[in-house]
View 1 (cartoon, helix red, strand yellow):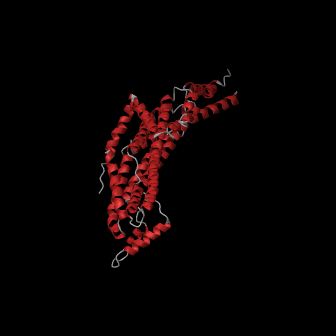
View 2 (cartoon, chains in turn purple, brown):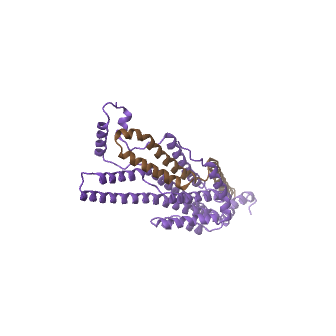
View 3 (cartoon, chains in turn red, green):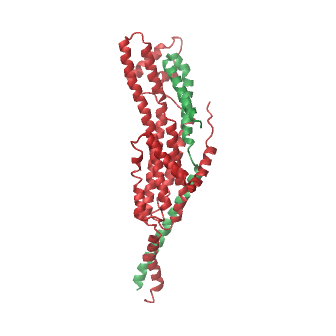
Length: 312
Length: 96
């Protein structure tokens, strides 16, 4: 060996051969890191989509049925004309006559809703962001990956529990129901209609009622499906975190790919089968003593954070 | 949260909305505040359904952000080690 070389070459050999070899032997290649990062991003994307569907459900539940401009104007004119002549008009009354069925939630409630949904979304965004630079530190960050497990467990359970909650507490399109019932009552009591006309109109309203129930079910399904899908992808991310050091690049890659097909387990399936799939995820978490122990602080935290309902 | 609370609030809001829709405009003016309260209660209870499942708060979000920084720092260190190695190889070749 050249006398000038030893010190430099030891470093060079380490960098060129030994370090990458150790890295490969440790099973922490950039490819594995990329697979885990991509899976975490898919988990985030599915969870954000679930939060979006929850927001839509919250809006739909209290929204009025759509009406044509002509119908709105006709009701406005009739409302104003129906007011006693000695009652003075003001802008509040005109505003109400213009849009009598709008529901304006208080600023306090709108803020609280926004905060709750943003909080959930931010959890998944922050979770996925942990893995953003993992491919650059695939070897040295190995032990840090293990620290992400407790969050994967909690966030997977959260989506599975949200799916179960919306399964148990379905949406009810309140104003749309009341509007149809009101129309049915009007037909039933309308003296100017013949029996045949009443039957015909009630038959049409029955069609609208069936459509309304189908819309409610579709909304519920959308939320339960998306939360369940997010939970299923969280389970895969959790399995990848658990196996990060043990599995080969190909094995971990295959596991990561399965996240893309997780939708097949829930999309388009019956509500009963989505429920079963969701229970499978919860069962997976609850039967593993380590996951169960990791979940406990999170579940204990729920009861201390949720304030009792107080609304006047 | 009691599962039945939301269901009962939905039913009450629907009954109130039905009365409101069947009322004339003067009665609507009087009924509007109570109707709005009924809808607000439904919104509050629905939000509670979501909040009752939130598993952690800002503290845990901050912890995750710290882990992200640790992973990023490990990436920086690994990149530096590799860069130093490449430099050593280049110098070694140059000096040989």
